[in-house]
Length: 234
Image (cartoon, rainbow, N blue to C red):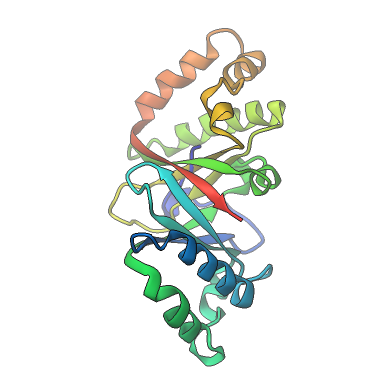
């Protein structure tokens, strides 16, 4: 799964407020994984149900952060970041008393803006068991080429209709070369290991050899990427 984040120069024009997600990495104490999942689930149900302050939990199964969890606040707006639950309604006390004792280490916290124009299948992702997430470092000045490439890939995934393909922009320079992020959904590792049909769908739209041309351009406009697989904690 590819997740793309870009800085201010890549933000999409929109009449509505940007949709933003906050990701917070959490490493549980040894042997406390199940208790942490239960504690965060209860906390989310109390303070972050569906609505402007919604939050969910994901577990990193493969990648540099394997064994960590990601607490995801969103979809939200920037105004929701200003008004979300805190000390006055017991939110902070609940977290410190029920969740914090189970955490060994707090990791990075990041913000990502959802790019609806370049994305397909959010409803598919919500029903999936896993997703693969890429964070991509794009060569300076090459985002316009990257964006054109993603527009074509989106159409290919739309034509398949079974896999979510979601793009996110990094709204600020974080210093870790995370310009964009891409997510792909899947429901089992057996499914993940098999050909998704993206190449066939892409070449049906753009002609024989177009897939290899896209891969060559990817190498030309990107520096590198990192990936991880996350499990939905339901």
